[in-house]
Length: 412
Image (cartoon, rainbow, N blue to C red; front, side):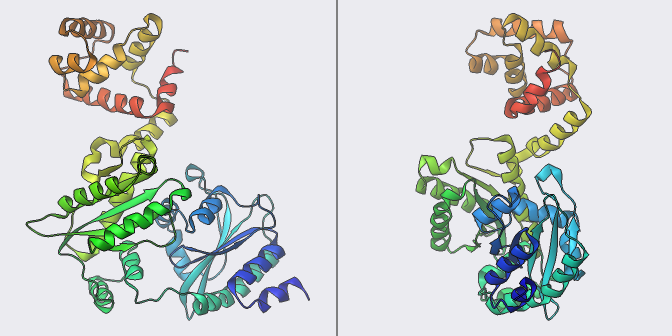
């Protein structure tokens, strides 16, 4: 029997993806409409690219990939496009070139088929096969998918991903599953860094259940909770309590493997996604800076929100603050601590007593160092704009090792 015929004679998704992968000699993945892993196959174990590997390990496409595809308009395109789409590589997120096909049944998306092209591209015959097989796959997914449309977690997922047309439809869906969106709420996201710590999500799930918090767990490495609040008891207070409970529940090793972020507090059901995206931004920032802090809120981010953008812009434009470069060079030549002193001084709003205390030096010693810095660089500590620029650069130098090395290259 021809292998193409075997593909169409497959009676379940797992059989089909195996036959299709064998036919195309490509790493192939099928996800449901929520981007959760359904089936995968490959000619050999080395054929999957890094993103596919993460998807297989966590049983779900990484959230940052989904959000980027939405930003690029690819998810919207898949809603109306029935033919296979070749997606070019997105290098800054490690997304390699691949083919994607939306799998529809009764004109409704049931899932997605992803094929990593690697070196050899698919030809017109392969594209024709994918176009022909997509509706059949959509039908199989419809028949096999166990997620019930009226399930609370599914509705919450749709709220998080803005899949409803308007607020009326949102309220209709939540009422149908007997889920009441709080009058005031914030979204809390807990993300683990390694799949070996998946048990952490089960522990947090139990806390959410005990606290009567609506949540979405899915099959990935995150659990998302909608934390309720009232006028007299804001959601932010409950977030703190939940975070404390999570911290007490986890071992020290588990605490180092998890990031917790929360968005701002809102009152409209349509703002759930906004709070969710803010919580994701908190986690993305903490991961980028590799901080040890277990949890943080969107409002606490402050300038940290823009560090990644500044880092990329300055690297690409080869920009360095020349005054900081001079100080770093002086430290390297004399084994001094002028840069550390400047960082602490500005961080403490140029307060001599507080800075000297943190550096464990006498105030006179601090004043001498500041005089050295001023003579070397002519920094005007009374200029708020100059202080802000220095502070922003020093934050990046403190938290991003690669940025520190970028500066060092200027004088080595």
